Image (tube, rainbow, N blue to C red; front, side, top):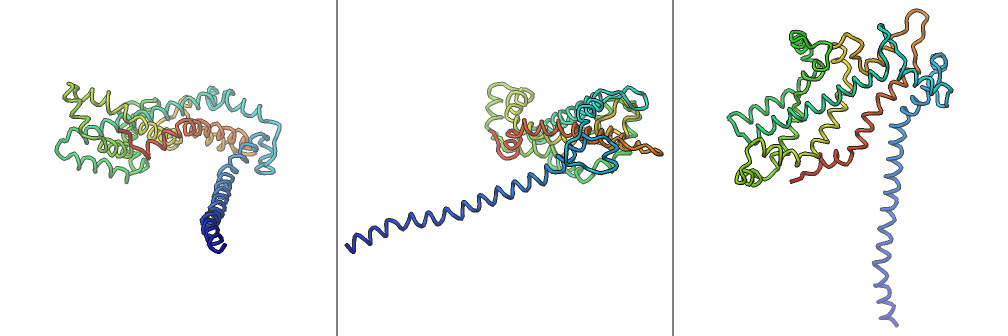
Length: 304
C-alpha cells in the first residue's frame, strides 16, 4: 500500500505542476487582451468622437464642442462634402479632391517602388566601382527631410514648367532612400545561384530583373507601397506649394481650407471639416487592411 500511494503521488505530481503552470499563463493572456483592448479604445476613441460630431451642425459644435451622441445632419453633411461645388472658382468638390489625393498617393508609391528597385538592382548586381559609396550617399539623404530641400525643389519644378500638374506633384518626390535600402537588403539575401542559373539559361540583366527579381519581391513591394501611399496621401506642404489652382487641391488641403473660413462673424464648418477628415482616413485604412498580410510578410519574411 505504501508503494502504491507513493506511485500514485508521483503520477499526480506532473499534473499538479502543469495545472499550476497553466494558471499564470491564462492570467497573462487575459491581461494581454485587456491591454490590447485599452489600446484599441485609446486609438479609436478620438476617431469615433470625430465621426459622431460630424453628424451635428456647425453651430452646435461651435457652441457645445465635440459630441458623443448622434446628430441629425449625417447624410446632409457628407453629401455636401462629397458633391457640393465650392471654393473660389465654385467648381471644387470633395470627390475631385479625393481623386487628386488618390493620384498623388498611388503615383507617389508606384514611382518610389520603381525607382528604388532599379537603384537597388544596380547597386547589388552590377557591382560597379563605388557602388557601396553611392548607396551610402543615397542613404544619407534620409537626414534631409522634404522641408530642407523644398525651396530648391520648387525652383526646379518652376523652371521645368511643372507647376499645377500631377507630374510636378509626383516626379520630384519619387526618389526614395528608404525604398532603396529595403530592396537592397532583400536583393542581397537572394542566392547568387539564381543569377548564375539565369545566365546559363541565356537570360540577360533585364529578363533576370523582370522574370525573377520582380516576382520574388511582391511582398516587399506591397510593404513599401503601403508605407509610401500613406506618406503621399498625407502630404500637405508639398501640394500647397506646387499647386495654386483649386483643381489640384487634395483632401488634406481641403480640410485646411474649410478651417480658414472664420472671417468676421462667420463660423467655420466644423462638421464638414470632420467629415472630410473621416473621408481622408478611409483610403489609407482600406489599403492597410487589404494588404496587411503582405505588409507583415514583406517586412518579416524573405522569399527566395
